[in-house]
Image 1 (cartoon, rainbow, N blue to C red):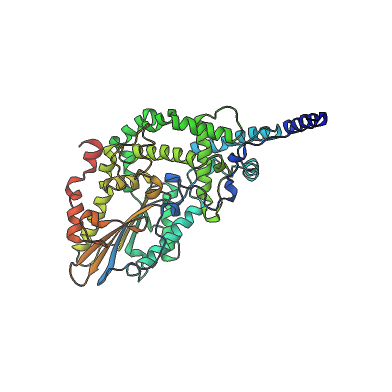
Image 2 (cartoon, one colour; image 1 turned 60 degrees about the vertical axis):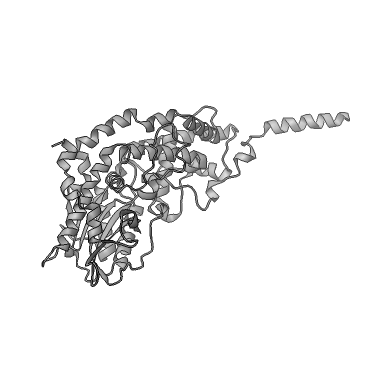
Length: 450
């Protein structure tokens, strides 16, 4: 080798060492800013559309039948995070400053340039005054849903008489406003003063000791907390920390903050097609770990993790059965054409559990990530923002006089699994499935053992 070639190699090596390095190219083959469909399966924080909800407003008709009554239990629309969520999001300003220092020092990161720049330009755009409040996206969730229900069941709304419908909700602003926007979607204007009612059903579980006891214990010792000590969680933390340029592992609070900002900012900007810059911290395998953690949290907080949840789910169904039974046996004046509740994910999930939907044979545990990769219990599919369970009573001119359809997120439920026809249940079939709640579902007994 000629002497000059050795000098050239040394010079090139020195020049390379002085350059600010990025991570290896294999870590930069993905750029979230250019992804047309970034991850959005955030469980109860997911946008409504991600659940696979039916957005087709085409009329739903049963041959020879007319829709005569609607019962609906809906969750409020997209909201901002609660106080604790906002605190986590605000915490990211410090993490952003640390990343800016890393960039200025030439530290390598595993992000594309655009994703890194978007993080460094990020600002929270949320404060404590917005805690748990409905967002503009949440308003649109319910407005458009009301419009779809009106178009889908024209017989119910043919005279557009608000007096034929009862709108009920708990006392939280987000449920009251969700009800008002749903009302506007149906009737074209906001309800007049007094046209909605605060009711005890939408949040009765908050006054139920049999529900509150296990939940308090789970948040201290629950399996979903133990999962944060698993190998899957540790590996995910290492990947995310390195991707952001840190030589140390971020703590659980940091990961939670990143995921919280990612999920809430993605949901509230859904209509604009925008995603949170912080979502770039994660890749598909990271999101799968976080999704399992979040699904497991809801499994124990509101689902099959405790028997009390599916037991309490009978309470809204009892209200449904009583409402339809009154219409079936009615002589003039008939009961209202619609009974519409707005509530929270807790009650929706308890009804899902009572109905036996999305049930797995294996219980969700801190050591079950690999075993339950193909699980049914995926909260995004049934409990996103604005999720809803509805039943429609039809009166028919031939055959069985009354038939019932039930929907989850505006999709017809698999009624044949309940011994019904594929498109509806006869009244006899419906009562065979649910009539027992009239005598067996006692709220005082379930909650207080009385």
